[in-house]
Length: 166
Image 1 (cartoon, rainbow, N blue to C red):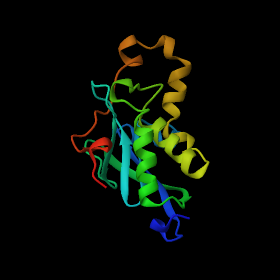
Image 2: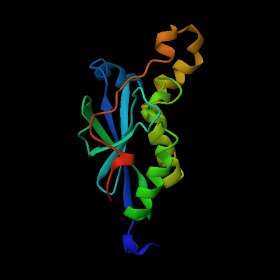
Image 3: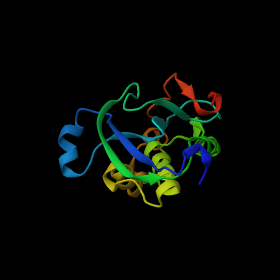
């Protein structure tokens, strides 16, 4: 155990947001268009698109991601990773998630939160959160090219991970 965590475990939470009011209907059918952020040590981390090759990972106050409507929080488990170790982990992971590589079907915010969750808990995020992208990947060849590569969910003009001060 890292002394910075005093042997305690920290909850790993998935904060899910609606991208469209249609989710009120789709949610009950097991579908929806969702944004998700992962909350650890009291802060939330997400991934969004921008036009640059720098990281698209950002940090926001929990359940307050600008531009999205908060829906619910899902408990994913716990981690014994200290705040400092988690910070180092998220900074390393941010290097794999550049804003200009965001893709609605293949590399979106839900792929990012799934990656974080699998690394911290060994388990995936709930399937319904990114189901629409998985279904879309099956039919990707039928989608217009503008949708196939369309960056959705621009990074809020808040604190990008690489600029944060511990």
